[in-house]
Length: 158
Image (cartoon, rainbow, N blue to C red; front, side, top):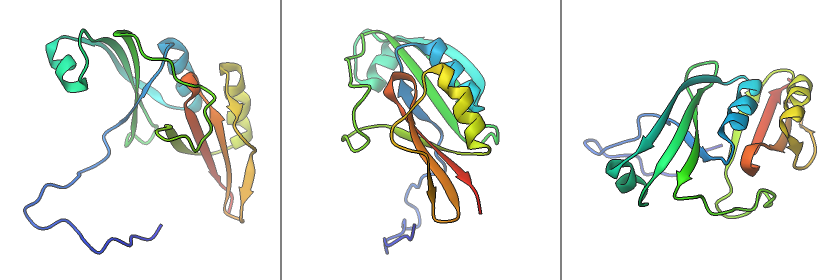
């Protein structure tokens, strides 16, 4: 994509250093960990979080949550899987279309798309649309992962 914004941060202003992680709320943490481990992410750590600091950060009261931090094989990206015990998470639509406002989608560059899809199907993965070839450079697909999360896969072909 081409950057069309002519405004860059002014010297002395804070700027983003990196994307630290993306968090996804799930209802079944063990299944979500297994799904993303099968995709190739590595479990970096787990924790239970609760208390007033957590409440104030997320803007909820009485938070008790378990998290699992999953790291991509290159070590540069992380996916935080979050399971709220309290307060309970409101139900979402796990089959909401990809263009629904606020829908979460995460994309991974992969090798051997067919093998990955075969390994993820036993973990509940279902294609949202079709596996397609984009020009001569990529094979792409969207699939549903844990809690209805849309997981996009891109395999370079050219």
